[in-house]
Image (spheres, one colour):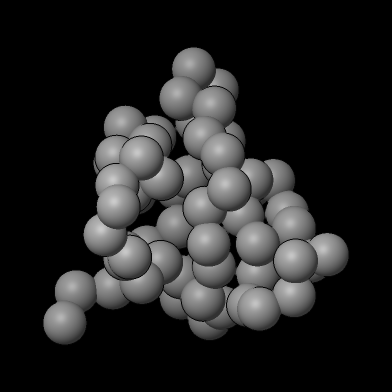
Length: 62
């Protein structure tokens, strides 16, 4: 996904299903659009956060 879409999802009141590397569901906690990076919470553990390239994020469409 691109940084602008990640920011749209972060700013939205709608819950979107986003996966990291197609394996782990994540919550986007912040987006650095200029650098194409996002900080995400992996799964349901608030202590498990990672800063990753937005290119590793994929929006699930149902």
